[in-house]
Amino acid sequence: RNISLSYSSKFFIIQGEYITPEKIENVYIHSKFVAQLFVHGESLKSCLVAIVVPDEEVLLKSSADILNIHDVSFEELCSNKEVKKMILVDMLDIGKKAGLCSFEQVKDIYVSSEQFTVENDLLTPTLKGKRRNLKKHFAIQIAEMYSKLK
View (cartoon, rainbow, N blue to C red):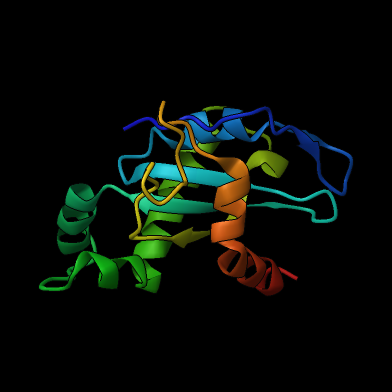
């Protein structure tokens, strides 16, 4: 369940804050909804975004229990705005309780039904996330999140 990401990826965001995405990922992975995630930031941006692959079983149950959403596929749940909000609120709450600074909290997430795997080249054979490949694979979704945050 816990997927760590390969190579050091520390960077500065536009306000000059030093970010270590692995530290943030290790906090957010404690969300019951999160099976895998990739926290992304850029030096010319003022905030962080994330790609989240939810735990399918937890998401199906919670969507029914909390949001009263029934008889929909995992893929449909991943594209549902209320589901996204439920996951993001939980992640931010966990981040706050863990002492993340406001600039370390993600401002938006993309909920993906696609697992990070060795086969799709998003994980190494030792199951560490390939940051460059993840960034490239989800480039459109990352760009869309940043465009909405302007």
